[in-house]
Length: 122
Image (tube, rainbow, N blue to C red; front, side, top):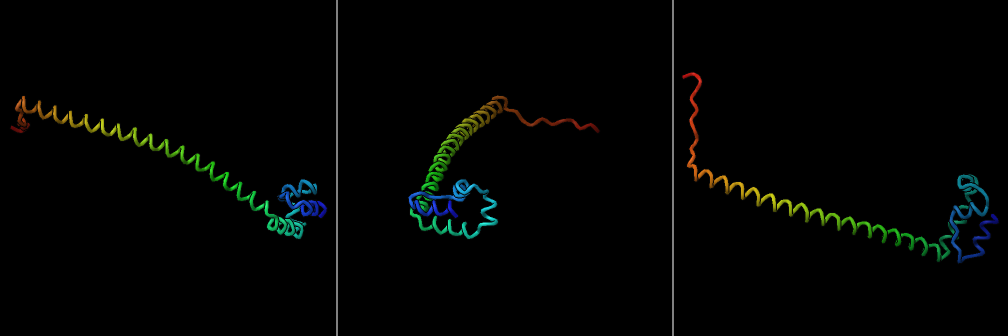
C-alpha cells in the first residue's frame, strides 16, 4: 500500500506493475495473487494519469515506426529480386528465340526431312 501511495502522490510519474513490485519488494505473482485490490487501484491510477496513456501510445508509435522501417527495407529487397528475375527472364527468352531461329536456319540449309527407319521385321 505504501508503494501505491508513493505512486499516487507523484502523478507525473507513471508506475507499472513491475515498478510497483520493485518499490514494494514483492514479486509480480504475489501482487497478482494476494493483492488484487492494490492492483485494481494501480490500474485506476494509470487510467487517470495523463502521462501513462501518452507513454503507452508513444511506445506503440515507436514500435510501429521501427516496423515500418523494417518493412521498407524488405520491400526494397523484394523490388531488387523482382528486377533481377525479370532481367534473367528477358535474357533467357532472347536466348531461346535465338536458338529457335538458328535451328530453323540449319533446317533450311540442310533441307532435312524426317528419315524413315527400316523396320526390324522386314
